[in-house]
Length: 283
Figure 1 (cartoon, rainbow, N blue to C red):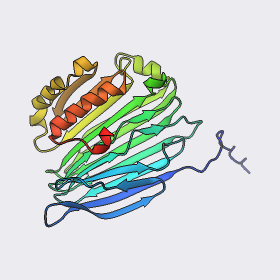
Figure 2: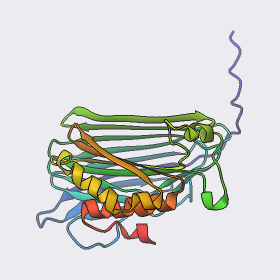
Figure 3: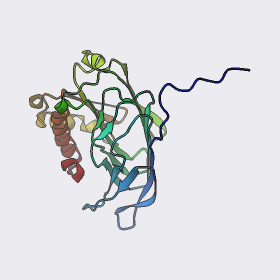
Figure 4: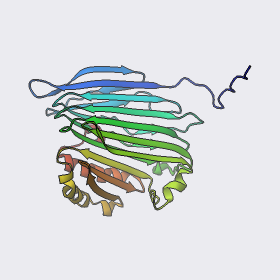
């Protein structure tokens, strides 16, 4: 008879399991409204009143942060012609882990003629954090998707450094059933040393990616480069660059700290989308 497996080396705890599944559709008058919503655990969706036809949803984590072994899942399904903006109430914090891996997943579906802007505030990783994050999106051929995600390694205002940890951040984006973007950032072990490498982040501790998929995405490349210049990235100490292929536009931003990156990203996003960012970004 085989010996039983040894117990895990970390203590067993009750962990958070937050889930939100939402569906949105365009009403006869042109406005977008929720058609279905399911919530569980500490994850909630709030719908502030905003002007215009687009619907704005704000995710709230009532747990106040994400600890080792927590799991969070978001599913968003946009019907034809819907217009939705999704963001978060504040920066999300990923705390130190003594073993278990935190999991965050988002599954986005955008139907014909629909528009989704995924604009969460930054995610802050603490020293020793262990995070697996995945974002999957499936778009109709004429749908529009704008994604922005920022990662911060430690709180520089408190002199923190993420010396050790684990991050696996995977994006898989499909359009009309065809994979058009696949990217995985994997850092395991000496995170600070890895980020210091010139080919990785050259010492930057704040990283951001902006992806825009739309029928005219590639045609807006030069306009995006003009916005990067106008945002004053060089003066802010932010490295930024834009490129386009496969019907998408991609922008990368790097900075030593999150504040200048956030200022540059705000100017770029507002200039590119031609509307202000959600109010929670300014509070």
